[in-house]
Image (cartoon, rainbow, N blue to C red):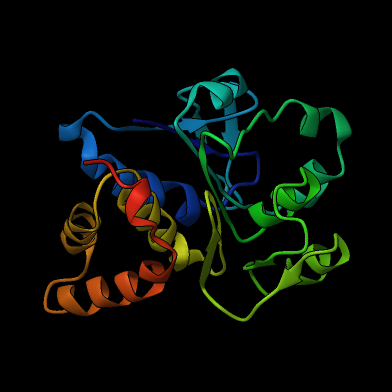
Amino acid sequence: MKIAVLTLDGFNELDSFIAAGILNRMRAKGWEALITTPTPQVTSMNGVTITGQRGLEFLPEADAVLVGSGIKTRDYAADADFLASLHMDPSRQFIGAQCSGTLLLAKLGLIGTLPACTDLTTKPWVVEAGVNVIEAPFVAHGRVATAGGCMASQYLAAWMIASMATMKDAEEAIFYVAPVGEKQTHVDLAMNAISPFIQPSSQAA
């Protein structure tokens, strides 16, 4: 499985790096989560400059796409040319968005009026885009999921693993990264958040 972690200029480090780190716990099973950027380098909201691993041309090739958030997402969402460069297909890809990344999915027409999650800052813009924002950390509709709050990135990663592999794989990935002494608590939180949205038929054998 190849996963594109879409990471834009002004990105939130917690969104992209936590999700990518958890997804890459599946490397032994052939998975790879790659930081995907619109330019060779992007700088985070806290001034950390990174070099992307893949460009936007990777998006349609990936088995799944995770859209991170950042302080410039609203500007990206207003750029018609940029939106046209984002090729995602929920009929064959699992697509997740974190916080302001939900605004991008809304602008791309991938949410419609379905309930979605986002952060408190972005909520008015997502509502303005015609999306019904709910007070929850995670929700999924078929192959499209949204999460609200930086630490909810673990739920997106767990959902992708559970959907494209197994719940056991997702539990093990969360268990590995969870704090010592609180591991089962974090596993339970993550599984409770995602389990209502996992379709058994979507999991790999």
